[in-house]
Image 1 (cartoon, rainbow, N blue to C red):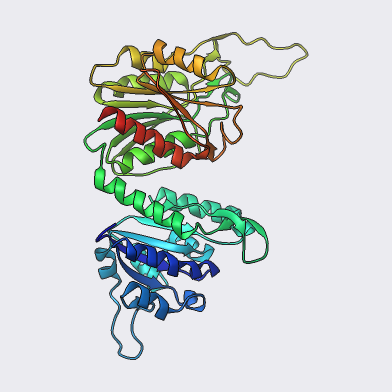
Image 2: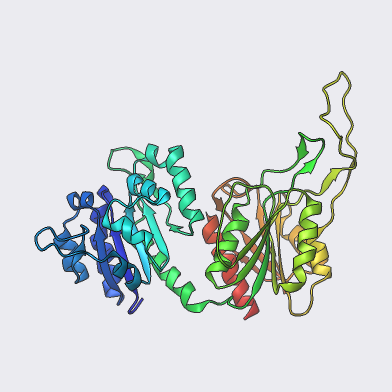
Length: 400
């Protein structure tokens, strides 16, 4: 991080005491650090300490009340390579999510020309509150990178999720950010990604589907965008949201709709990452109106859906690279190898419901990558964000 310019925002949480250690780490790595503190944060860490460690004056108010001199928040925003807000309290989070600008830190955030990274810190009940979750989703939608709070002992005396990530974890996240922005390994590449489930209609009300949340596909999309790629994301129904100037998102519902979207875009892409959980079957006929309950058991005849991944593999040029996914309940490696060969993949990402913490609708995953040379690479259980970064890193190394 030699010469990197980090604008550190400190808000009023007890975890602010850890920031002194983070500043020392950043300075030792050669980074330049400037800081803006909210007035409330001064109760938790002294501005004198922050100024001494950063080697720069600390911004707190919009103007110096003694001299009347204005603090130029726009200049802060133009100077920085990245803004890091740690700790991020629920109060500042809410203001960021709604565009509130009642202090110097928030005014600077709203005028930034660089990315923002935040490390939330609050008590466990606050961290789980629906409004906090909603505000974090809004920040993600605004392309803010979130370093998730960790589980541990809290200032309240309780133990749970809400503890700010340790300085070492935040430092690693910053290092990863600069590594990605420096390399841009996928710059000039167009990546097609499928995500989420498909819903196959039985009638206008009911459908056949699965528990896929789309989290894995969206995290892979974020990782590809961070590496400079242009991304076409074709996603089934999901609550995940993402906006980016290099992202084209195509929303679909059924396997047929996803198939058509893939066929329309695959030829123009150099890489395909097919993580969607596409339903294998659909009802042969869709009832035109809601099926009423009766005394007899209904019979629904199913037919196969189009095999989207197989089509992409069969229509893959020598310049294209194709990645598939497989969630298995048994014979993970053998089934994965069969799918890899049958569908003409370059590598396949495997996971199994037998592994605790892996599967649908959770924030973690444990993956194994199997490539066309029969090389097997296992990864430890991690967040889906980290798993996605591992997949994209493997992809970059494979095509380079």
